[in-house]
Image (cartoon, rainbow, N blue to C red; front, top):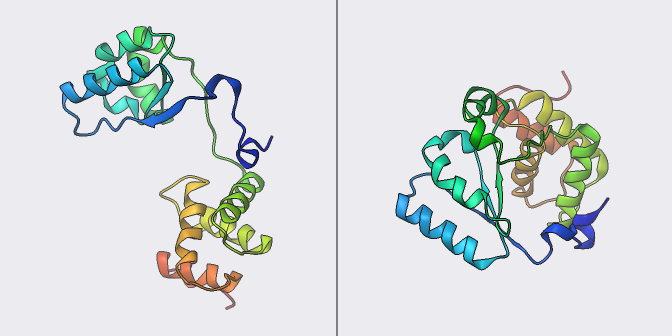
Length: 182
């Protein structure tokens, strides 16, 4: 469905605030304070990215995981899940595991199309398809749709109508690989 476009959300998260808790460099007292505030609010869903990096908070987090009125979403990459989180079965049991795979090319083009529309960027479908193709082929350090969105953001700085040639030029500049007609 097109929930994002319609402004609708799923029943379970309606009237909730989704808040990312950045653990990096956070003192223990700050963590406790932030989690207590979220728990007391009663309508907060806390998101903790890369949970595999913060095994020291697993015990502290357990008390909050038992609170039915507090939503907690934790993300981990596949390696972090297999190598770290699986070693903490009691902690793991408190979560429902959902595998999220990168979108395919068609889905990524649709995501870019929606992103461009929301950001009022005028861009043709064939150019969006080229962004996805070039990002997939030449940009290796990120996954989709992020690498395509970042490429679109870079193209946006050109302050003109974006063309396939512009896509090739920006990718060429980023990767030092000459692209285009030989």
